[in-house]
Structure formats: structure tokens, C-alpha cells
Amino acid sequence: MTRLCVSLIGSTCRRMIEEMQAAAAAGADMVELRLDCLEDWDPAGIDALLEAAGRFPGEVVATCRRAAEGGHCDEEETLRVSRLEYVGLSDAVDYIDFEYESLKASPNIRQKIALVCGPGLNPAGRPKRRLILSRHELNATPPWYTLRFTLDAMGREGAAAVKLACRAESIVDALHMMDALHYSVPARPTIALAMGEPGLITRVLARKLGAFLSFASLEEGRESAPGQVGIDRMRRLYRWDAIGPDTRVYGVIGCPVAHSMSPAIMNAAFAAAGIDAVYLPLLVEPGFEALAAFLTGVLRRPWLHPRGFSVTIPHKQDLLRFVDRRDGVVEPLARRIGAANTLLIEPGEHLDGADAKLHAVNTDYRGALEALCEGLACRPEDLRDTPVAVLGAGGVSRAIVAGLRDWGCRVTIYNRTRDKAEALAAEFGAQARPIEDCVRHDARVVINGTSIGMWPEVDASPMPPEGLAGRPLVFDTVYNPMETRLLRDARERGCRTVDGVAMFVRQAAAQFELWTRRPAPTDIMRAVVVEHLSGRGLPS
Ligand code: NAP
Image 1 (tube, rainbow, N blue to C red):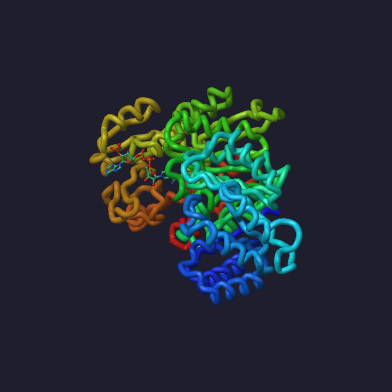
Image 2 (cartoon, rainbow, N blue to C red; image 1 turned 90 degrees about the horizontal axis):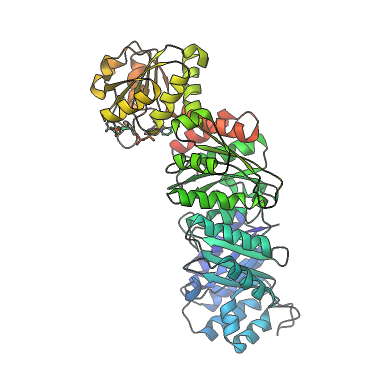
């Protein structure tokens, strides 16, 4: 089973001992003593550290990473190695992580490492420690054949495990690292991780692919390598303990994507429904080529079990183009809207994934319609001829106007930029008016699709209160804050209200149902969003 290893980076032995205790409490299977982070090599402190390591319930790795491979040790090599020799004589340490380049560079160093690591007994007559041979590429990910060659070469050294960590410039580099892991695992215990935000997928899916270990930090913001995730987030948000070889992979593709609430909502929903799946944030650079490179790459690796993706800014339009190029199916209304936020992947039989079937769907308009119907306590077919005022003509308004017109509503669009309102109205058979006129509308339903009222401009409202009185329903798509000025004004004037969270949860629920064919646990999903928006969720 893949170990979850927490890197301890305290600058004193005492601090590192505290970190070790915290790592044990957080459920780490393994800790890595990053001796290069210690400011002082004090013998009493090191002995206390080793004594504490002997009490750690899991396994212990010691390393003294040199600066050229991303560590802090710029001491002379023999001094660095002598420190590892010292801790390597202690039974408290299970593994020594040593750099392959350093091993190759000097027969003398190779001999010293062999005294404490490998089969047989050490000079103290005790079993030697096990060796993790590692290599770190701090600037880029080499081509796939170099990755394989390096892992094979390290494997021939007879180490207990081999480790490759490379900086990912894009998520496609992360796919190459997972290829390398997939290739190497049957031959030897392997660690292959992509550093940087695009590499997150390699850290979480390490367990699915049977890696020897994956690293986590003890606290967010105190990472020992770029892109590392906190242990709490690994276990609670990314379902580390539930991931296995058959776990299906989902995620949200966007740029930026790190602050998306979708992983929290979807992983909570999968957990509640007992579904063997994980949902990850996937940073894909803007542009069709980047989206196509990632999706093509994922589809070519059916062993990752990709089953669907949420797609957000800036890729919603390009998703249609990609699905068309693969002869997939585009939902008719998504086609008319010109954007889709959901990809469903039906796996095929081919090992290269070439026969996977793709479906592009827009759940934004579905989410909005469902939220609206619930607010009005009606069915979509009852919406026919309902006069609706839509404020805004951007992406969200476009999906909403298309959905409302599809069900026969009479829609008037009010937008600051008049041309945009008119173009949208013409496309979907709606009316367009200047935003200043919105107070004089005759609509039964008012929908805010502008970003007015969004944090931090929380006192702003897109419609003066006098435009709200007597309207049965006011719906604000803004969800941060949940209680917007518009909704407060509307409630004070006796209107029923629907908040943006309702739409957000319903569009996510529609994705969940599409992917799993199971009812979505919407109460749990909403609770997760509310927890996040109130600042009580996991740090983002
Ligand atoms: P968008 O494409 O950038 O459109 C923004 C709209 O807001 C445009 O119509 C813009 O008018 C208008 N606007 C912005 N600032 C304005 C101002 N100061 N005065 C008047 N009009 C202003 O954005 P979007 O993707 O449609 O998102 C809009 C809102 O929807 C966001 O605030 C977001 O919170 C919300 N949203 C909700 C959900 C959900 O699930 N609940 C999902 C996505 C988005 P111009 O055309 O004149 O620029």
C-alpha cells in the first residue's frame, strides 16, 4: 500500500520532533527527516531526534538533500554523507534517501553509503538501512524515454526504491510522470512525482498507481517541494485513504483552478454515496491546444480510469470543439449556448482509449432552471410565458437566457453594455433594454447574472429596491456572499429568493448524476459550499 509520507522541515531537532508527533496524529504512514533543513547539527539534538524517530508508529526516512537537487545542504559532500552515515547506523531510521547523481559521482561516496544501506549488516553489526535512490529535476520534466531510462538505471543499483521528482511546466508533464510510474511500478518500488501546481494529480493518484509513497506537508504553506499538499487536505479533501487501483478519476479543468470549491463538493458527494472515485483540480493553461493536449493525453491512458470532467473558464467553448473533433455528442442546448461545462467519458475497449465516447453537456442552465423552479414551486413546463428580467449578458446570463427561452419564458435582458444585451436577445428571441430601465420592468422573476454584489463589493446591488416590490421571485446567481444585498432587499419587500449557491449546487449535482447515474446528495453538497463560504472549510 502506498505510504503517505510527511516531510519534516523544522529548523531545529526539537521542532522536528514536534512535527513528527503532529504527523503521527495526522495519520502519516511515514515521515521524512529533512536533515538539510536543520540549522545546527547538534549531537544531543540529533540523538533526541533519533530517539523520537524510534517511537514514531510508522516508517522513517532520513535525507540530507543537497542544494542542487532542491534541498538546503550546501556542505561539502563528505560531510553531508557522514551525517547520513551517522543516522543510518540508528535502528530508528528505516530508509536513507540519497541522490543517484551523487552516488554515481564518487566511488568513495558509493562505498560509504553501502556501509549503512543495502543487504547485510552495518559496521555496528546491525541490519543495514534500506536505500531510496532519488533524482530531482528542478527546471523541467525530461522526455518520457529519459524518465524510463533514469528509473531503469536507478533500478539497476539495487535500491529498495527509486524516486524521480521533476518540475511540471504543464499538466501534460504530470501525465508523463504518471506514465513513468505506471511503467516502473511492476519492476520495482517507485516514486514518481511532478512538482508544481500542475503536478497535484501525480501526488494524489500515486496511491491509485501503486507508488511506493507520496509526500504531503504537515501544514499548508510549509511544503518541502513545490506543489506538495497538506496531509489534512490529502486525506480529507482528496480521499487519500479511499483511493485504490480502480478508483475512477474526475476533476475540474480550468485556469486558475486552485480556489475552486468543486473538489470539496464532489469528493464529499462521492464519499457520501460510497462511490470509488476522486475529483481533482486540474490546471490547464488557456487555449484550445492546451485543453486538447490534456484531454487527448488522459483519454490515451485508460488505466487512469478517467470518467468525466467539469470544465470552467477559459475552456467552456473549446470543450465543444474538442468533443466535435472526437466525433462525440454535444447536447443541443449546449451547442446553441456555444459552451459546455461538463464532459462525460464512456470508456471503450481499446487499450489506447481511442474508442471512448464523449458527451459535452451544459449543466449551468440546468442548475439555474432547477433552482428557479424550486423557488417558484413549479415544473419547467409551467414556466411558459412567464415574464423574466435577466440582468447581465455575460456567460452565466447566456446559459440562463437559453434555458429560459427553451421553456418558453418571455425574457428581457438588461445590461450595461447595450450591444451585448441586443446580440444575446437576438440570438435567443428575447428583448433587450438598457440597464437603467430595469427598475420599470413587468417581470414576475428577476435574475441577476451580473457580478454586481459579489465579494468584496457586498453593498452593491444591480437593481434599486423599488424594482423588486411585488415580484414573486428574485434569484441572484452571485454566491459569494450567499446573502447578497439584492436578496436582502428582495426579502424585505416580501419576495421569495433563490441564492447563487442553489444554482451552484444544482449544476454540480447534475454533473454528479450524469457521471454516476445515481441521485446526488444535494444536502451534503450544499453544506460543503456553505462551510467553505463561511470560511470553515479546508483552506483553499
Ligand atoms: P461575465 O461573462 O464576465 O459577465 C459579467 C456580467 O456582469 C456582464 O453582463 C457585465 O456587463 C456585468 N457587470 C459586471 N460589472 C458590472 C457593473 N459594475 N455594472 C453593471 N454591469 C456589470 O461573468 P459571468 O461568467 O457571466 O459571471 C457573472 C456572475 O455569475 C459572477 O458574479 C458569478 O458570481 C456568477 N456565477 C454564478 C454561478 C452559480 O453557479 N451560481 C456560476 C458562475 C457564475 P457588461 O457586459 O456591460 O460588461
